[in-house]
Length: 331
Ligand code: KDO
Figure 1 (cartoon, helix red, strand yellow):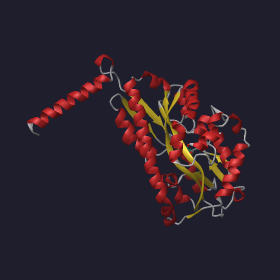
Figure 2 (cartoon, helix red, strand yellow):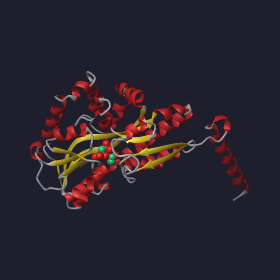
Figure 3 (cartoon, helix red, strand yellow):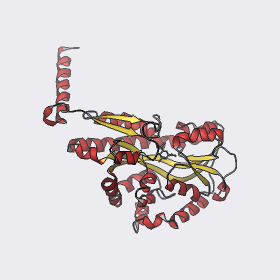
Figure 4 (cartoon, protein in one colour):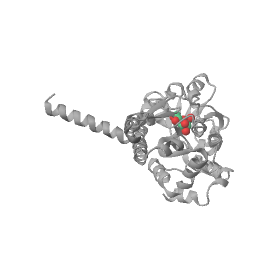
């Protein structure tokens, strides 16, 4: 290495040390904050990969990002309580899980409301979201940093019964995630919903304990559900999302600079994951057909009509702020 390059690396080294100094009180090297994330997602899921590639490095000056996958740290649907109790710093949560604490969140779980990934981002960043975010922060100690795109949920069955309308789902044991709002969606689709954690789904399909599950195409590939199922019915019944949940207590201990870095890192990771998930959705129909699965569109209008009617008549709708559906539809 030339003398000049050596000097440059020394200067760079010094400046980066100084930069680290910026984030410690009085220049002492304070402990780095540990940011444990708990999720039932796999390490190869696009949301997981984007957080490791973007979020971890971006906050590394003052924090250590420590993801825990496949529900190994906390079981599905227990992460929010873990954050509230100070036992966890981050999670990939859902409106369905938040709705168990605050029923008004169920408006974001209703089938056929979000139109696409971009619509999800507009809704999350709109002032209409403020009261929801404030409630989660004040009453649960959870800050919703950003919205992540999970994808359009489709029906994925191990049985080869043709599914054209909701009536064809009568008696079909459709696994849905273990919170009430998910069970409601399963019934609204016309099926017999079975509550079960995400990590048990592959084996349940393999053994026939369930007839079907629902998830976006990238999940069906990433978790290899196509190995133990015969068909995918393109209902697109929920353009699904997750929120990156962050401990409010930890957030309040960060400096303004650190908060800005965390916020940008979360948004950048969500955007990278969204782009990759959308690209996968565009190519996976052919992939599953090549694997021998039947992939087809049902009478989507019939599913939309039944699901929307079920939600509008539901006890959930009574908790929705007046006019919020019109505001969401107008975005
Ligand atoms: C699932 O359990 O089917 C689900 O898709 C629900 C989502 O809210 C989210 O928890 C997701 O699983 C996991 O992130 C695994 O992809």
